Length: 456
Image 1 (cartoon, rainbow, N blue to C red):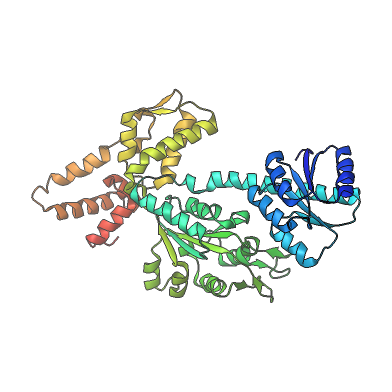
Image 2 (image 1 turned 120 degrees about the vertical axis):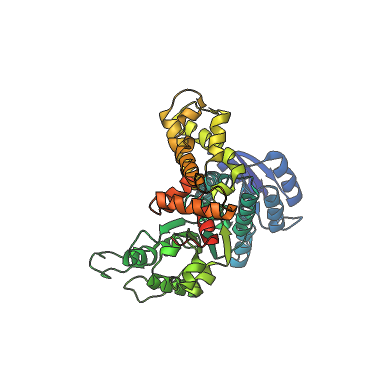
């Protein structure tokens, strides 16, 4: 903050005169007033950067003036002055928004130290606010793109959850549907945004490393543990943690996680001391946890603890209305990132993108657009720029024509079942490849396989 305007509200003329002289000598513009009502009025007209406010005024309490000033401006630094300081009064003043409290009599140097400290604190607070605003813009709910009913429901849920203090959330959906984006949006739209967001992939680490990563370890806990390490749960205190691929967690880790959720306590690996933290757990999986519970691969108690607030993310093939929005968003994003000018897309290319089944969901769509923007030139994306799997129907046509050659009189259900079996046979039972061949999503293929009792 530049050193400019200070308002002094005090009925002691000697103090206001000496403060005005001393502060003006170091570059401040000074205005003074002798009572609360005129102080409030002058505050509105003068718009000072800092207020020196006496606790005892002839017409009203300095605390009441503080309330009025704070109601008008949350940014202005207000420092209380009094000859009658008590701990209780100081605490109350700080609660009402005072930056600090100084007891009379004081020297100009003492006041200058307090002013400098208050300015430094406010500047730091402003920087944090700017960073948080940028993080919210980058990771907040505005990054969840979708006008389809399914995504509007998800966006509404994110908004409600973020405003609550729900401690466990379960995100489900196919790979590439944006579970990590939703987790970040929940965090950065909530009061927890001022604290860390951490993430770990439960399926990417062996048990011992996962436990050390989350719970930390004491020195000497194992061979390479040369120093104390704080785990992600400890580092994310008051914030949020994403436990990705929770369906891949081992039974032993599930037990430890369940204990932590129930008791809010944990011990570092090799430690004996209980550590208490307050962290929001956002678990994510592309697996059917209910099925894993039935198969005794996932603890039932842990499932119910995590599934307090479930959010199911739909596959992209169920969000046809959103594909054009996402395409335009990624085109704009990657043009800006790579300083390119492919801002337009032909109708034919958009139709191909909209009709494709997107087995890799949003991640696959993002990768396709990124590749085009990096490699191609010009100002318009055409069908020629699209990868072959989006434009070639040869495999699909051959599959259907081969099948119909001998199957013209079969009922529709039997035709569909036979097509699925043939696609699986032609792809060595690879469901992803079979889904592409049939031009449907893996989710849709699994549903139909279940419907027709096809065991892979």
